[in-house]
Length: 499
Image (cartoon, rainbow, N blue to C red):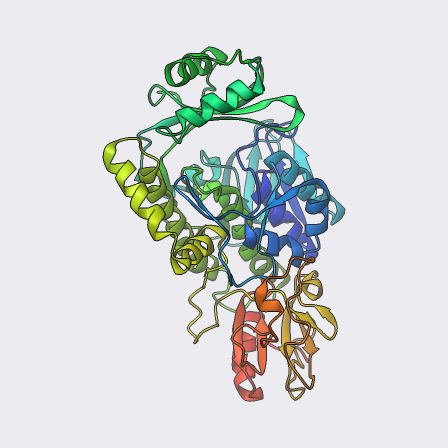
């Protein structure tokens, strides 16, 4: 029997497959496309996803083929400088188009031994107490202990599972594609600048491979939104907004997206789970969609692996919904707000001007940037600050923290030297970091540490914690110094001790 079937070989499914393989889980990824897509809706990794890639040893691969950006407070078409003091050793994003992200995650999943099957479409399934039976379009059948739907906004898994997908339908639609442009680049830039004074859902900009990425409002919401628009649709709308179609031709790909916001009522039903766009859809404003899916997979992977490998404490798999559903709901809310700010009516224009002034305040800019980049996510784990937050990368005597987390295990970061994880050493690493003066050399990262790493500040998340217990996803499960207290928290996240 297969341990886990992942339906969908996009960034979410591939990230999940890699996480599962770190724990030696037998995973099969079913992708209905026979070849990787050229479409690039996701244009980069925000800070938290950058941290995730660093925690798994993938960041250097991304940096080798992609540039970085430092756009703080990018919200509803409003761009402000990167705020000071954001809690990260990686104060930047990575400009990685979705095909590049998929290729790198695909390579990683295959290196770890995932079984990726292209041209395989799930058409139905049934589950019982022991597993899930899956039927493919060609009539073949597979059985697995768990099934995860990472198969997009029109998820077959979600529909067959019967999970509600409430929310708001699209009220506006935007055309998006990549194509060649015959017009002079200087002329294009001038016209785009002029149009964007009143219409922020418009743009023509160079993309990889000698083509341009074209974004233009559609003339309504299509009845069949699954059908791709035509080149003539783009030309017509470009002429309507810019007075010219720039001589666009030879499209690489064409698509449309709307402002619909929907979220699955449940992320888990028995042995079937949902992640990524299968669990939530929203407008691409703020560039959060791909990142949200990758972070879903990062949260789910180690928990599902624990269930497969038999050491998951009771209720661990249910914490996936409990933790990630509120995060998804928050993203839906902020994209709704951004769509309002992107409007061209007088009210939206006035609101955008007011919001822009508010974002000149550093506290507001930091709040908005933390929200968009997901570094402010705190799971409700029932403890005091900083419990529930992810921990930034720091320098330790043994090296960088994130470099020590690449095997996907828990970690006790201990500066008392008096604690123990005996009984959990097969699941939790123990790093003793006792030194005379804390903070010296802290900051970490890939040569891009921020101000907090050079001021001599304490390197741990709350500045005073004698010890920090980290889950495999880097979120803080416990802080303290008492061994007995630690022993009450280890079983909650890492199951019963061995021996």
